[in-house]
Length: 278
Image (cartoon, rainbow, N blue to C red; front, side, top):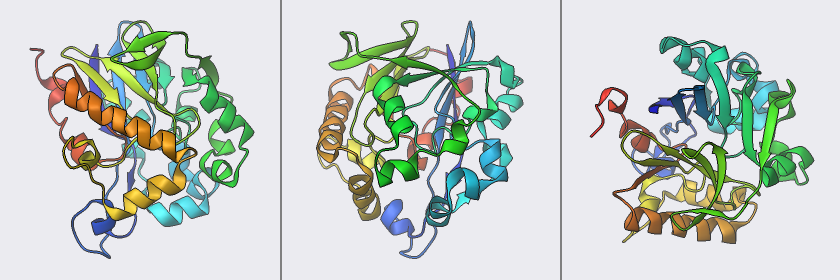
């Protein structure tokens, strides 16, 4: 399989110092929506979608005024997954499967751009997004983004494992859901086997590359507070973040771990689409 790493939504909340760990206190920060476009023998697979074309055209209704005000998204069609796919020479119909880490609004805005794709999701996450039982969940799960009726394929834990984690097979043996709950009730990292190693898209299990430092893990103050405030189960979130850190420490030659919103991690994949396998 060939994997493309793309940014499907830039967000610019205030205070680069509190979000990126460097820059001015009142300068605009940068966050990305790190999406994978996976070329397989059975069409394209997306891991997350970031913001979609309808989000760009009607951000207030689709994303909500509070999110738009707080994150200041750069609303450009050219950053959507559909635009990236078209630049690669594919069509929207070539996307056969979508595997979101979770169903927060900045991870599934592009679902409606690919209405024929099967959406593989951890069953507890789909249940939470459907129920929207708390104020937190009513703000993070946006009904307009799924009004088109996605072709859901819910998955449950069935006893399989992957490097010490539960594994929920989604598409064959090479793409799997790895439950890492806490940020949401059904949050998952997504494991993808590329030509060289395993990739693990950790979604929002952590937000900043420094959090994976085995010796001195840290995150800028704004992101640290945000993660605690947004967590549906902060104890589980912290436990799974520790497990990911141990994974990075113990299996660095087998797997590369990255999160959804860190621009430094995304930049680290620059050029890999064209690098030959080793």
